Image (cartoon, rainbow, N blue to C red; front, side, top):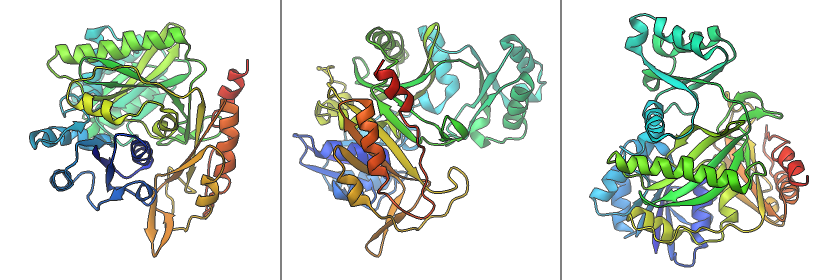
Length: 432
């Protein structure tokens, strides 16, 4: 099987790396890729948002399957265009990708399908312009902290967690009145703030059947002990000790299967990966959001554990013909530590040469996935905020964590930074 992976970050590196190890795969092409992906795939200089260029590449390379990494091309209809050109693609249609592309759409779907989620309401700019009383009334009903989310894709910058009613009202005014979220904030979703540990659930689906892929937990904030601003993710680990067998089954039945069935019933079959961001509350798991693609850095923690070769199942999902919904993970643990540029997620400098990548990869159980790197005159340099994701497997979270941090210690460049507490609490839970 010949596969094209679309994207050039750590998630796409992990996908290309695992697909290249698949016994049914003969060739992996990536567009645009990065220096790390170039070690396992042939990289082509075609951007992820160049739909015509990607379709042309898929045809020239005669690929059997296209695997789309980022969400933006899916929301923009890349899967539809690929299918119309006769190319099989793993990823939802633009209509189905609204599950991530529009939080209002997702909230409405969850309400109709009885998928457990936070109480919420959606408001538009017109609602605000006609008078803020509706917004303020709903905030009064919530009676406490609230979360304000831009309806559309906002590159991770469209969520405000407000501690007070006035803080939430200010966030709504910024979004709807002043346009602080841009077009993504033409509508906002206001929801109650849930309490509990967060977990990410992943599953493959062909639009009917659901094949759970596993659980991971990521660290979103820049600083240890979850302090500082949100980022794209500073680390992740799998498995998640707080997700026991009964919780996993409940998530499968009440969240993943209900959502896929509701999409099908609405005439919008969802094919690809379903990624549910969940809060494990006292009342059980509740959905915070859905994503229409693999997570980053969660994918870097899941792919090293994947025992089942994925290519044939991804193709079956693309064709609407998933027969075997059993996916096996190794009885191991994986911890991923993101090494970032100093100053991230704010202003940060790039172009620094990266040392120690070979030494990091030589640590037992470790793999280095490139996220924000580039090659200049034969040297690998930093080219983004999150530079590399260092993953390591072990017989326990504690062992995997030790190996990941040992490997990460070898990665050097000016201003490098990483959190020091990834999976620390989970490793302690695992031993109790």
